Structures are given as structure tokens and as C-alpha cells.
Image (cartoon, rainbow, N blue to C red):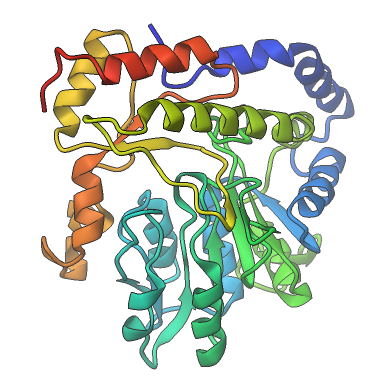
Length: 368
């Protein structure tokens, strides 16, 4: 069996460092926020080339607070994409604003800037491009349009730790950037976690208060806030893992290149494309195929685990039927949802395992 992801292997490779970090937090009794979280904030801000980083309990919370700090609220509209994990849209709904969708580019699975401007109205309060699968959206035209209209851009970088666009790190281009540390992410906690990075002093101050009950100082509640604080243990573990992130990222990129070389000219699938002006960090290695479900069954029979990211775009999810979109509204997102299959990719994979996955994909027994 080749697993889709192997978190046990990652833990085994850094067990001593992680165990010592956890024991250090237990000894300090700084279980919520505390010194380890503060140190991780400084280190992750530096990693992203950002001035501030504010750690929270999930990536969803990071998006929620970034939107609130940008002034988003009831009656506003926020533009994003329908081909993403539902949290990108849920965070908009938490503010009371209305999600408005634009379709994706088929090559990158990210927001199509050509379609963005037509979605802007007088009520548009923010734009949320999603850096899906580890490759950043086309930020230059997105920022040009946003700046022209005076609209904040909140980068959903929850799958893009260390990704780059024209040598700039994910999260450092827009008004703020939001990351998830869900365990399966490129930088994953041993539980939940998230962070907002920003170069805006006022946004940083507001988000710090909002994550901790709106307190400017203890028991002085300036804002109506939330309990979105990061645990001390997660902060300590993430500090350990951040030291290894670049090595893990390069291993992912090596596997991605190996996959793509072996799949060049494939009759079964279309491999993902890394654009020349971007650094793809391959959170997901997503191929496209005409018979996704058939290929997934064939790979499972060969002992290869796969994933679906994501089989139903958000505008067609039952939970968001109230938005009023119908099938056909966003053809590129709907086609991707039908065709995309995620192959195993994680730093601890071997080249031989990559080759075995490709052999299973290309087996003659599978006929689309």
C-alpha cells in the first residue's frame, strides 16, 4: 500500500525534537498562547517576509478575522472562487457578507483575473484569491484591479506555505494572508492551528484583539471578539517543523518534477503545470482525467491511495444552495471537480514509490 499521506513517518523523523518541545510547554504550563506561540509568530512572519503574524486556532479563523479586520460585514460582498475547500466561503458567511464567485483558470485551478472585474459591485468589500494545491494565483492583475477599486485582498494561502509568485512569498502580497496548520498541510500542527500574516499595523492590532475576546489588555474588551487562540503545544511543535519546512518543500518539489516527467505524454492523465513565475509547493499533486472515479478505483485495487480535492464545487453544495447558483454557472470549476484526482505526495515518499504510482496510473488494464 502506498498511502496518500504518511504523518507517522514525518513524526518519526523529528520525534526527539517534537517530544522535547511538547515537554517544554508542559513544564512551563503556558498552555494557551505564551512564549512558544509568540516565538513561532515572529519566525513565521520572517519566513513569509511579512511584518506581523498572528497565530489562531484554525485556518478558517484566520480567514474570518482577516475579513473582519478589513471591515467586511453584513450587506457586503466578498469575491472568491467556487473551486476550493468550503472554509474559504464559510469564513465569508461568518462575517454576514455575501460570497460572490468568479471561475478559475483551468491550468492553475486559481482565480481567473480576466473574470474578476465583472464581479465587482459597489458592495464588494474584499477579494479572496485561493492559492490552491500549493501554487499561487496570478496576483499581479488581481492586485492591479483591487488597487484600482480600493478593495483589500485577503490571500487564502492555507495550502501554500512557502509558495512564491515572482519571488514573493504567499501571504505577503495582499492586505493579509491566511494559513492553515491542519495536520496534513505542508506545515502541519499535531492538531488544529492557523495564522494571519500582514504588513498592516492596524490590521495586526485588530486581529490580535479579535482572536482573544477583543481584549486590548486583560479584561478590557475593546471589541466583540472570539476565542480563536493558538495552544502553546501547537506553537512549540510548529516551531520545530518550521525549521524543516524548506527541506520538506524541496522534497515535495522533487517528487512533483519526477511525477511530471514520468507522466509527460500520458494517455490517461494530464499532469499539473508549474508556471515559470511561481514556486509550486505541491501540497496536492492533482492530475486531470476523463474518468476520475474509474481511475481512482483502479489505483485503489493496485494499493495506491488517492484523494478528491474537491468533487463538488462550493456553489453546488447543498449547504450553499441559498446563494442561487446552478450547474453550468462556473464551467471551469465544475469540469475540475469532475476530473481532478490527487496522487500521493509527501516528503517521505521515495522515488520508487512515485514510479509505482505512475505505473499504476498507466497500466494497460485501465481503460477510460
